[in-house]
Image 1 (cartoon, one colour):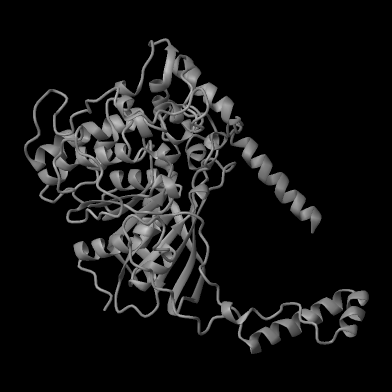
Image 2 (cartoon, one colour; image 1 turned 180 degrees about the horizontal axis):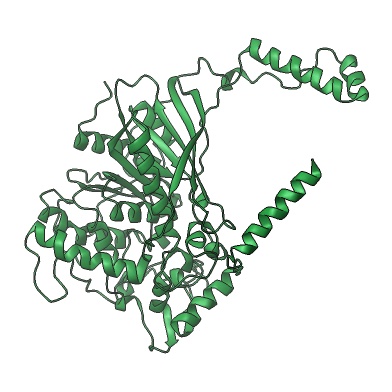
Length: 519
């Protein structure tokens, strides 16, 4: 057997060698960063601010210094200066201009040669979430790596839908670990059968093991699961208490997955790291590395945010083609923090996602690049460069062959990314610094971006936040104020760096807009 395996490995290695695949480039994050600086002719970058307010280079939290570049790129003015006055002008002229600059300068271009993804359902399980029966599937999307077998990419996701739904259900796709929610456990009779077989297998494997088992005839290799974790009756879910304005953290909401299922929705958990690693060293691996055959990126190649968004779009392809239990016209995308950035990028570039819940996403997500508050462009051109296109590093350069650039030189800003989602449903969610949703995220800067995106929603015939579109003067409403009358929505909850405190508000708002009821 060993000789056959050795022969197969030799043949496989020989085949790879004969095909002359370029060897994998292995960079540290620092080496990859320097490689891109060299490609761009950057000699020095400005360091990003420190999150430690006592540090000499601490981030700015003085509102009087927060808007060094107060004028945002016009969202409804063409590059030639002509005003956009009709939906057709937006779709055919202005939006393509914005997309081109987002591609080239900010998030990177989607390659033309991305391999096909083949999906396989690995597990289908009948489970319970609280007392609601669900069908849970563990699904793997294998990316064809025949063009470069040295890299293997398998998109990992879990789909969960209510078992007793009368028809297809809306689904929220969420970036995060892909785990079955409550794997069903064997009933007592099945467990006894399994343990009997295991005892015999163990006893037959070794006389010493048999002697030990004979000494403990009641021993079971697999103990019974505690009753609370069994597939069976469970305590009723704890209902969320209502919000009390001004009192942080009082609503203590259940996990988002429980709220979704209780509301008659399904959900998907899709694991971003199975698509592309969340670090700079991984840029020659994952889907980016596979397409580039293990070589370094070029300046306008996609970064991790765009790669994660691509993976979500491939998952949506699977839902549309293969899951009749899912209402494919009402699939949303969700994420918090860096995954909130990815969720917004996903929705902006793929108009098949009908809604988004964008949680606490900061720079590269919903907050303005031009704002000098907390997280800065230099934070993204430094340690988090791999989220973005290589070209984005130019805007942190203090010394380069092209001179120096800063946030004010970026041809687009995040209000235009939000506008790319119009007229679909966009719910922007934040918490409060006192509970852990750090000042670093620039809540006001995100509110300004939402305000500035509003004219596009209105041009396309839907409602925005319902206030003026003067981003220079509008201030955030009080915490726990729902601004949910339009297709663009905002709510700052009274908890921390999460969006489950806004999930019940999102569901109520989304249900109203898509006509979904739990009955």
